[in-house]
Amino acid sequence: MAPRALLAGNWKMHGLQSAVGELQKIIAGADGLPKLDLMVCPPATLIAAFAKAARGSRVLIGGQDCHSLPAGAYTGDISAEMLKDAGAAAVIVGHSERRQYHGETDEMVRTKARAAHRAGLLPIICVGETRAERQAGSALMIVRAQLDRSVPDDLTEVVIAYEPVWAIGTGLTPTPSDVAEMHATMREWLGRREAVRLLYGGSVNPANANELLTVANVDGALVGGASLKAEEFLAIAAVYR
Ligand code: PEP
Image (cartoon, rainbow, N blue to C red):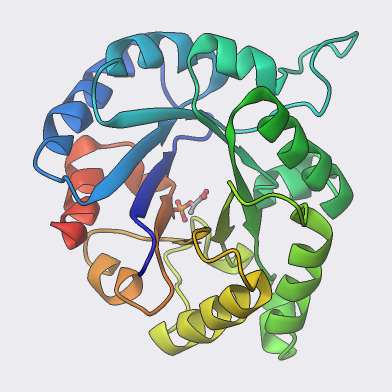
């Protein structure tokens, strides 16, 4: 049986306190979508307010990154325990923007995923090839290597998001057959961990959601830009109605 679908919105560095109105629209729309889990990952400054607004609803709140240690002298960082304490249920780790702009390696991503698990958060681990790697024909090999190094092998409660770096925020997407090939490879890599959800991420919008999210072994999506407006996010979610 296919795992239950998850649609997670990554708000990145967008949103002030007034954005709670957008979350409330998503919460209202979630009632008509019983077949999938919905999640919003706002900036850290909004997690507590969003968690409070979403309490008792079908919308989960997640963080976008965490430190690997529970506490310490790490100015500006936030631990998984702090996210949990603020009301988060999950945290994205290893997003390509963290890897690119903050020098995060696969090994760091793995320790962050372990930290999330330690704190009782669901880690959403991101992997994906660059444009040059796709053009060189090495996408499958690159992603397999990222999985080997970024995903702790004893973790079963984890979500993996395949996000081709060249598709993030560009309007470009892989073909459904490329997504199918990658997700079949990831599913095979997981072996007995059948309940692990495999998300696709990269320029998902209401117009392409049906084509991308109905591909075999795609158990939902991680959505950036199109998750900022409730109407767009819910239009993507309607694939699972
Ligand atoms: C992302 O940042 O995880 C993402 C998928 O962004 P976008 O949907 O904007 O491409």
